[in-house]
Amino acid sequence: MVENQAIGLSRGGRTTKIHAVVDGLGNPVRFLLTGGQVHDSRAAKTLLESLDLSDSNVIADKAYGTTDLRQYITAESGTYTIPPKENAKNK
View 1 (spheres, one colour):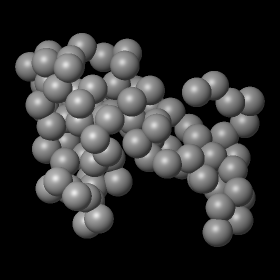
View 2 (spheres, one colour; view 1 turned 45 degrees about the horizontal axis):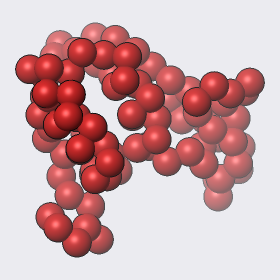
View 3 (cartoon, helix red, strand yellow; view 1 turned 120 degrees about the vertical axis):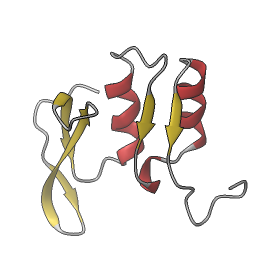
């Protein structure tokens, strides 16, 4: 997901989102800027693909709780702590 500018249009007008991966102490490891209309889970997979997830626990909020992202983390020998989305069929 390479963009010339990370400025998007959403209900709030022109916005930018900062997506970050931090270590256990809160130190930034990777970050990505996207337009405000880009869903959080799309950026998460892009960030995680460059990291070794084996023996790691990915902690995120429910915006990142897509089945695709959960399966990706599991396939990379990682675990996750992500609450289910309220509209999820299989919580």
